[in-house]
Length: 204
Picture 1 (cartoon, rainbow, N blue to C red):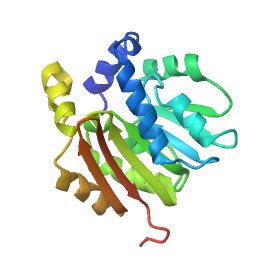
Picture 2: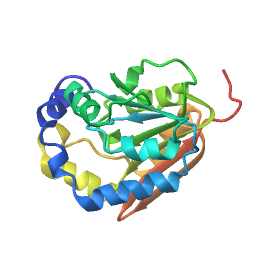
Picture 3: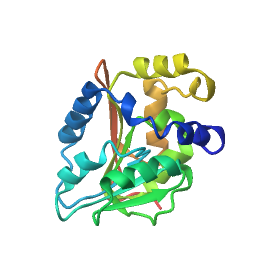
């Protein structure tokens, strides 16, 4: 996801929040709430952007939990840090395909509205498997359907024109091949959601 994709988001960082609609915020709040993240969890927010999920995740994990905001675009992260910098939030710049975290670091990995932009999706899912704890969960989601996401990207054109969510079976295969179990997929008008769990024990 280096190069032009990173540049695309760096150039749009300043005006990003102005384009987020109230109903989008409401849907994301509901998604995070429905995930039922346990208090005290350590959560990685992949593709954190300007930090729309950070306050929702902090509320979910409570005072004993922690959130790491992770994004390719430095300007996006800088804006997120201005708004939500604090002792329970860490900000890390990088590419999820080469995640700079030790094995089994996080209880939960969430990925809001960023999966289509991953250049090497198989590698990204493998890295999410590596850095989540045994028994931990990964959740990939958008506050709209797969069809709506793909339509938006096609209409935007340019760099993101072909940044599309794959068909259901391809998505399941990516997670299955990485080693995940309990793979569930929801696709409806107000929600696209994939959840998968790293087994408590798994082949090395």
